[in-house]
Length: 202
Image 1: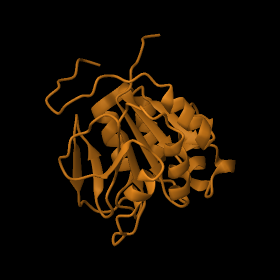
Image 2 (image 1 turned 30 degrees about the vertical axis):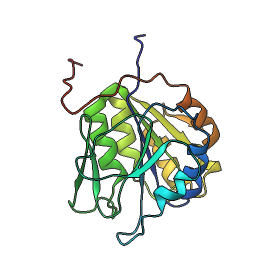
Image 3 (image 1 turned 60 degrees about the vertical axis):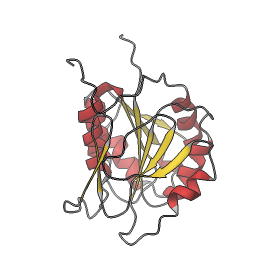
Image 4 (image 1 turned 180 degrees about the vertical axis):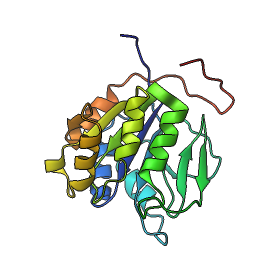
């Protein structure tokens, strides 16, 4: 089996996500190299407290995403409310397209774009949530050769989202939040990609 080094981690969550995210991020090693992108369902008029609440639990830099901002290592990026987040090669894009599954940001939209941009170098994680958003996006990541992690539904505050993701991707690793953090910390990291980097043939 060919060695794979990873370039980006995507985390999708909804109901109960704040507690789950704080636990997961606190469990990452201090020097965690991979950029980590958080997509949580939030009301369009939501405040911007999510990033500071996550910053309290990590020495990594936590920041809200702005359109066309670069994707850099050792950062935790938080998708803003009321925008779809698209992952390009080395940078983010924001979209005001119609909500998907009543959600904007949509986890599926972000995961699918990341799978298309990063292929086998992407890692998808689905945590607690009350609907099926993220299941098809995680499936796309898996189909493109990336890694898929799902919180064990019985440990989730709301098991619907991880249950749907596990059904969509039977090969996903079902783990507790602590176990996911440990597994992410063990992943080999590839050099950061910039928007001008060209990809080889897959």
